[in-house]
Image (cartoon, rainbow, N blue to C red; front, side, top):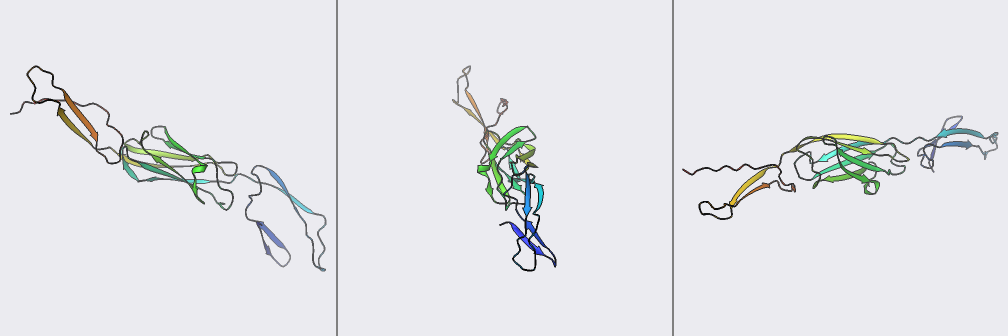
Length: 212
């Protein structure tokens, strides 16, 4: 029962609060009759009719990043919230797609089976591992695809990613070694940021000095 009524001295007005029984994009005819139960009023003749259509409901989106700033290679959680005016109607289906706009990298897609909450519905994506956010100011976008009941919407935000700290180690596999012999040398460059799984890339320069 979705109808509620209000009355004046000469009429009643019925309001349908949730149009969930109707499919967006279709046309419908509504028919109204008055069957009196009073000796003072005559039943309505003829029957009153009118037509109406149901459009796709609008949605709105927000995007949040946690933590608000991070270090390269560490875990970042992206949260997309899907809102609409009529959450007492059907739950949304579809997908939420996350993109790193700064690099054009697709970060991930969350389907409606992964949505949580109820008005707004939330799609959460954890970014780490093989697709870390690059150091600098990163522009992010999330897009809700929409479905048969709700239109698409998108959200954008940015976050700061700082460079990861490193350390350098130098080890001779044998020391001392004979004049003219090979001197095996191991240089280790380590990402010392806790929680980061990214190995440093680039090159190392080796210089030799005479001790005074």
